[in-house]
Every structure is written in structure tokens, then in C-alpha cells.
Image (cartoon, rainbow, N blue to C red; front, side):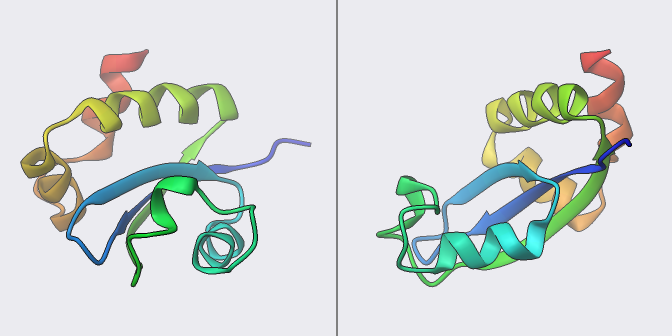
Length: 96
């Protein structure tokens, strides 16, 4: 049973970007928005949150590698990725 992993990007109330991975992006976004301890500590004081990008990556291993690469990108490159000006396949090729 292979589980599909997704990369997602959230824009915060302070205009910063948060990148993460999950098998269920909707559930994870609710956790980030909730008042429980399951959401990322970084996001707790940066509300309101808006999910602005998500894409299927594949395996957990690949998702972790792609997440690490995307987190290192400058904000302008992340925005290009979100707008479709940069293809996620380009990043995947770099991590393989």
C-alpha cells in the first residue's frame, strides 16, 4: 500500500511562506489553523493562514527531499513555483 505524499505552501498573515509535506493536506491545514498542539509552532502567531499551493510528490522519501530543497529557495523562487512559472519537476530532478 503506497501512500501519496504532497508538498504544500501556506502564506501567513505576515506574508511569510511556510512549506510542508503531508498525506492529507486538508487535514494538516486544519491542524495548523486549530488551537491544538498538532500544528507547526511557527504558524501559531502568524495567522490568518492561507493554503496557496499543493502538489503531489509521491513517496515520503522523495517528499522530504523536495521539501528540504523548496525550503532553501528564496521567497521569489517559491512564488514562481506557486504561480506555475517554475515546474516542481525541475526541483524533483535536482534531488534525484
